[in-house]
Image (cartoon, rainbow, N blue to C red; front, side, top):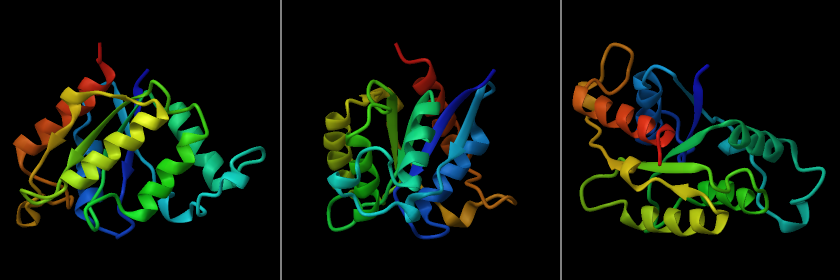
Length: 176
């Protein structure tokens, strides 16, 4: 039986570098790990505490079920205006009222250009603290995305990047 790792992209843009990284992570997943890309970010309603109860809006219930069913979570998000994109912060806001992410191993991949992305990472760390997620520091990595070296499947072809991503997924499952 394989362990499921939920892949969360913070970008709504089709074909974004963040989605590319997560699709590559899915392809590079070690044996025994099934990486599943969450694709419902754009369908989540704006967070409203009045709606954070039974019955939850269907897209929120689906998000929480995906989180609950995963052994761990890997995030890759862009940085906008020095922090998380609003749509991804909205996703995280919907996790605060539930317990699905509490104690769940979580890591992130920073695919921003050198010298960028730290604001998003800092905000992500802060919000994950509120949710009670278990950040696995050794699984958090920075990768370089060279769109000129994509393989025939449109994924990152660099073996070093693929190894970083596979290692990150493995560390999420094997955390102490």
